[in-house]
Length: 429
Image (tube, rainbow, N blue to C red):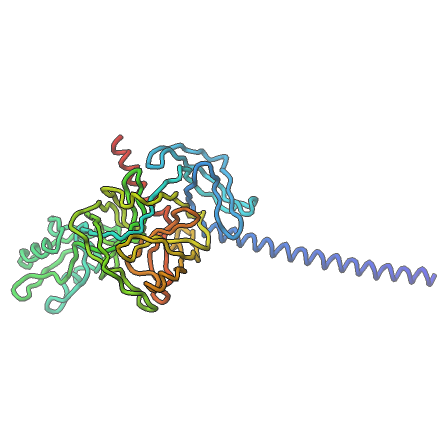
């Protein structure tokens, strides 16, 4: 009896231990599973927010995103694929796709455009920019006697004056003439402020025998930038990678007309920490080599009279989802010997549609660093080449670390020039 009772106690204790072990195992398993699920949901949320909703894809390829974790895609069977044609890349089609994490977990539905991969000439040479604004831009407000009539009526710096008393204005002289002839009577001033169209009543004030509005305006701008690419199929170009902005207001200049011309580089001021350097140059002549059709957040775009780099090699366009951190090259000119290749590293890539900047790059080429101290103002638009493809362009230099700067995706710039081509085909049809 005692032996039987002792064996029973042993069995009971062993069972209790086994139950505790099983309970601990299930708790640990549940905890690990919870952590994995939490991490998975976190990844899904991260990629859903940071990945764009639209992609360009080369014919014969499937959409995938070059990221730390594998992001593939599969077509949404319930979505209709629409065939379209036009543009320099020929026929293309739009498809709805589901991005998949690890090839199995749905992330988000996106749209892709399948197209022939464009072949472009990366340029890298400087070009001169001349812009005439659409209307005139208010760049400063000043007092006439005790206050500014323009400021008092509601006009702000950065506003674009389109007309005064129904008369269109295209120059500083136009504004001055109308204001002087007003005899102090209220003028109806129509302006554009962003996407808003506003009208104000401005009362000129007499000072030193002449009526004045208390504002300075600008009707044109000129500068130096770098050509990013030339598309031989339709004669279009992209450059700068950022808009031409007014020097005072820092606002993009509203384009009325613009031309590009040849530049002779005369030297540069070397970059150093806290003080970015600058390319120096002058227009080679008054002749125009092309027309600027658009000045926007992605750069300046238009048409050229001839291929600016006929002896250069064509490169295929690289799409944003194909770019990866690591080695790359830029094509840039710091003298009149033409563009040269310099080594860089792509340090960060931001695919989000809301990103202020697409790329962070760093100059690693010792020769360029010794000569220029890094990125110079005027190198904006220098094409970025990675894996034998044109993937981006330099746009800005870091003030405190001039070896570093920002860049823009080349497919974003190309989309602006393809719009011109498609518009031309539609108008011709």
